Image (cartoon, rainbow, N blue to C red):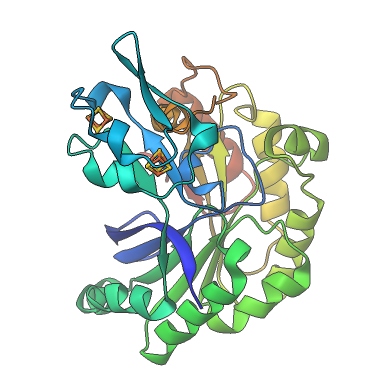
Amino acid sequence: MDGIITDIQRFSVHDGPGIRTTVFLKGCNLNCGWCHNPETIHPRPELQVFPDKCIGCGACLTACPHVAHRLADTTRHFDRHLCTACGSCARTCYAEALQLVGRLVTPQQVLAEVLEDQPFYANSGGGVTLSGGEPLCQREFCIEILRLCKLVGIHTAIETNLAWPWECVESVLPHIDLVMADIKTMDPILHARWTGQSNDRILDNARRLAGRNLPLIIRTPIIPGVNDNEKTIAEIANFVANLANLRYYELLPYHPLGLSKYTSLGRESPIPEDARLDPETLTALAAVARQRGIPVRPAEST
Ligand code: SF4
Ligand code: SF4
């Protein structure tokens, strides 16, 4: 049973407790305008193009069997519609101006990489985290990785958008020690506008998860012009305060790092290039959430 991943990130400290190994799976059922990992949205491998790195060697022109790269007026052009993501050009591009994102792996191969970090889990309380993209787009692959990890005693976590039928979410729970999920807004229309789907299922699944004896971390990416206001955060915090198994609620500041990735994939981000979140706004919104009596990150500064 193969799956497609974009990366396995070692020594991660932002994807759950302790030192973790984060596996990024490719494919997502939402299309959030602010995604900072847009290379994980499409389910299949893709070619990323970084023109700034190109040294003009011309190797890609002959490497591509579909003539997706061509010269016009001494400038290299790439026609994404002709590309089948075979990776041939990326292998010849020593400047790394062309990079294939997405590789096919087995659950056993993922486990082998995860096991290299196992000595770091014990002392830190860490483990493995499945992220993406949306891991549940490859549900069977997820379950097999998680099952193998549990067999060797590794703590397992999943970062999921919860935008699934409950039966789908429920099917992975026996293999999971911690669920991390986003609530971006309580407004179903705003949610649909910015992610492509209403939040009905997400909220319903969060309530159902609260009935299970499974630790839950809820996070909100704070996006300028979308949800960076006190009303939105107060509404989410009110909802989160009723989730019995909540470990903490975390506000994640928007970061424009994903913008260059959109360009490399031939896409445009709907978030303006100059959008920024200032630290004072994040601090003020965290204080609003804290008023609901729940543990909030970032923690109050002393
Ligand atoms: S192989 Fe890479 S460096 Fe060479 S021309 Fe093509 S994109 Fe540029
Ligand atoms: S990935 Fe393959 S098909 Fe796509 S441009 Fe490169 S060589 Fe051509």
